[in-house]
Amino acid sequence: MNVLILNQFVPPDASPTARLAGDLAALCHARGHRAVLAGAGQSYQTGARGWRRLAGEAAAWAALDRAACAAERPDCIIALSSPPCLLAAAARAARRHRARLVHWAMDLYPETAVALGVLPRAAAPPFAFLMRRAYQSCARVIALDADMAERLGRAGAPPPAIVPPWPPDWEEPSAFLRPAGAPPEARLWMYSGNLGRAHEAAVLIEAQQRLEARGTAWWLVVQGGGAGWEAARAAARGLRQCLFLPHASEAEAPARLAAAEVLAVTRRPAARGLLWPSKLAAALAWPRRIAWIGDTDSAAAAQVRHHPGSMAFASGDAPALADWLCALPPAPLPPLPSGALRRARAEGMERWWSAALAEQG
Image (tube, rainbow, N blue to C red; front, side):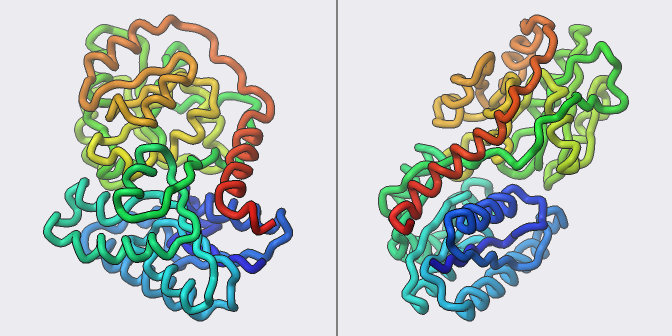
């Protein structure tokens, strides 16, 4: 079987969806099929905003539309979600090639853009119509959780399977990598990843202010980037026990995460069912507590509550978050179980294949 995989970002780009697209290609190869990755030749970490970002996404859509239609005839096209309305281009190519179309939804468009204030609600209907037609062209649609599956059904998709992202292909670190600037006695809680429109930074800063006012040993480490990065740094200027670090390299990322007692994951309630924070995949496979901040009655919040020692907090509830951190007793960081990330990856990829392409062999 010849498989064409479409996404705005592909390896060697370090974006979460590029890694997943590369994993899908490797999965196809391992099953004896031929897979070709088609990307837009762009980098996730360029940081373009405003009209530059819109221009970049339009250029990416046009490039992928041309690549999909000109590709050697595939038997199956797998489309992720970036750039917006990529699935419409994939559906056009699938009709041209008479190929099976599989969609793994990373986020929903135009719903996400409307919910986050990027697209006026009045401008959404033409995009929603385009996406409804594209969903109806799919042989399989895969959602990231039950909330997204429900939203996809309302948007016109066939009944979706549910397969969340799996962790990156990291080696378990042999030692923890504490950030320079944090004293040995510091207890670390960490936000790792982009601070975009869908994420909450103010609640992290306010919780840390409360922790410092109580004289605790907790230090907040924020590593990554994104549209909200500079605003978060400005809000944290008065903090004494807070570090802002750039994105960790692939080699350092697992050792940095392992040094934290608590991993913070945020999602604005408006984005429920529209996207699933990619950082949650590694956190759920990690023997560390998770602090989820956002919607408390969602499928993602339920996943976090089932993770040992973890808790979900309402959007903006910095007092409860600070109280919870204060109440956690100091304890040695547990070592990472050997092979835990590899097992989580293998299980996730097997579920994906069963949901999307099992009948293809």
